[in-house]
Length: 113
Figure: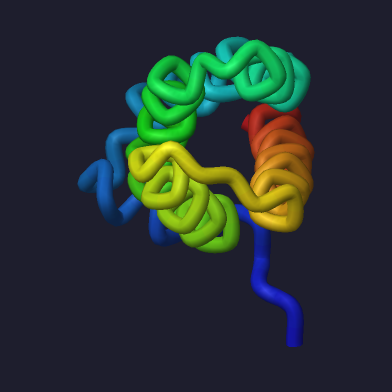
């Protein structure tokens, strides 16, 4: 069975049930990371691995807090590789796919709030 892109109940539990904070975090995540796939690709193509790693690291933290487990896992793997100055196209593709899935799931939750 495929993992769910975003676990609303887990996220609310992490935020001690604070729905206002939950909504603010969701909106910020959604608005902040819409173009991250292309931004990350540009940074990597320009050889800016430190900046790319910082971006992935930031998303890793938010993904963990939101219960976006597949994105968190993809972020962890890509973050570790970028810290070493390396890159694996499959990991990048997986990260971008998981980010897209998480953004879509967050948009659905926001629409229902």
